[in-house]
Image (tube, rainbow, N blue to C red; front, side):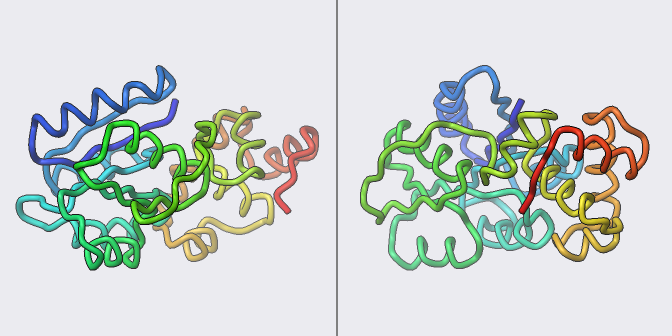
Amino acid sequence: MAKLLVVEDHTLVREGMLQTLRRLGSSWYVLEAFDANSALSTLSDDPDIDLIILDLMLPGMSGFALLAHMRKNYPLVPVVVVSGLYDGASVARALRQGASGYVPKASSGEKLLDAVRVVMSGGLYSPNAEPRQRVPLVRTRTPRAQSAESLYGLRPAQVRVLEFLAKGKTNREIGELLGLTEGTVKVHVSAIFRALKVSTRAQVMVVLARDKVKFD
């Protein structure tokens, strides 16, 4: 099951987005936060968030500041900005700071779903872009990750860690390569071991060879 985190301080708007996102289907679980602190607390408690939907106008820490923090501390989790600001400077700034998509609040619910589909399939979603053919909703960002994810039920971030495990990287090296703390890498490695039903890195290599998983 994929997890989305909606960060929006206005209750009615947040409830509307939650209702829209439930149209993605039962394989998606939607969490909610009303400000930066509650969002960061949720991310700290649950390292398996697959996508963040972020409002820019938040009480306390601004959405731009929170976006910068997320890109630094959770670089594998894509962020889609949903904002009442719809000027070129705000859109460009959000995308420049690492957002994977930008949806004006004046847009329809279907536009939000389109953005989620595009970003989760590895693309960038901009309101200024030409309309594009809707892509099937997938829970991964690359075809190679899709194979490992479908085989073992891993999340996109875990697949990235698995790729470096397959290359013999240590937890510290993986953290440096992906911009993660060593503790976060350990959490992902433990989840990978459970998913592959193994207890050592050597056993991981055996399972990958048996299942003919390729990362290159």
